[in-house]
Image (cartoon, rainbow, N blue to C red; front, side, top):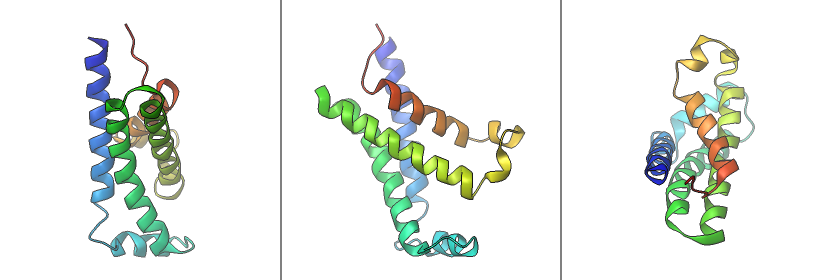
Length: 129
C-alpha cells in the first residue's frame, strides 16, 4: 500500500510540475520572459527558457525515476527533485516574496510542490514497507 501511495504522490508532483513548465510556452516563452524583464532579471529570455524546460524535464524525471530501478532511478528522482526545489526557491524569491510565512503561501499549491520536492530529494526511490 505504501508503494501505491508513493506513486500517487510521485505522479501528481511530476504532472503538476510538467504542466507548470508547459504553461510557459509557446516557445520561446515570451510572456514569461517579459515578466522576468519587468523585475530586472538578467537575460530574461534565457532564464525563461531554462525554467520552462527545467520544469518539464524535472516533472518527467520524477516519474521516470520511479520506473527505472537501482541507483540510476534513485539518482534521477533525486536530481529531478533538486531541480524542482531550486526552481521553487527561485519562484518564492522572485514571484512570491510577499508570501513568507502567511496565509497566501498555505492556500496555494506552491507550498506542496516545494515540500514534495524536499520529500523526494530525501527519500529518492526508497519504499516504506
